[in-house]
Amino acid sequence: MAGRLDGRTVVVLLGEGFEDLEFWVPVMRLREEDAEVTVAGLQPKTAVTGKNGLVTEADVAIDDVDAGALDAVLVPGGWAPDKLRRYGSVTSLVRGVHDRGGIVGMICHAGLVGISAGIVGGGRATGSLGIKDDLVNAGATWVDEPAFRDGQIVWGRVVEDIPAFCRELVEAIEAAPPI
Image 1 (cartoon, helix red, strand yellow):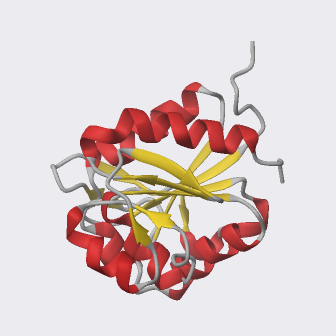
Image 2 (cartoon, helix red, strand yellow; image 1 turned 135 degrees about the vertical axis):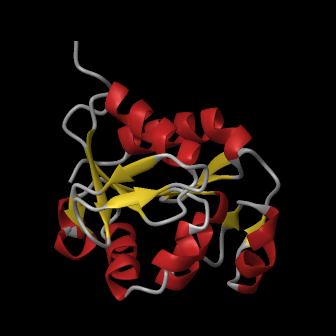
């Protein structure tokens, strides 16, 4: 029997200092539901170390990902979002998925990428308390909740909220019209 996300395509962004659990748990959960998950980073096939020491590598370069071919993009937290937001290819990809009606999942510090992509503002947002002021200054209404969906964005607060974030993310991708 096919999973709930069979036929759906999701790209997960990878950068140095990613939050290990906020990367791996959603990746596994999406794969469990049969989503086609691709990991995209600044350099493909290059070791990238997570904040807590887990090492992985990207399948493809972010520059080579077509936002029009994705149902969703996931941005894990950690230190990586503050670095990834500096690349136009990253912000263009996230904005492109959002603008064409796809789902954008962001947890913890990932909202920094959303801010730089210009998709945060006018709605509710959450994440690590460390980015609360950034989200508010970008025009969002701060909400201290574990996880929720606001339009096309699925928000997660912190590591402890990963189960709620994964539930919201799977439901949002499943409910969205396929590409």
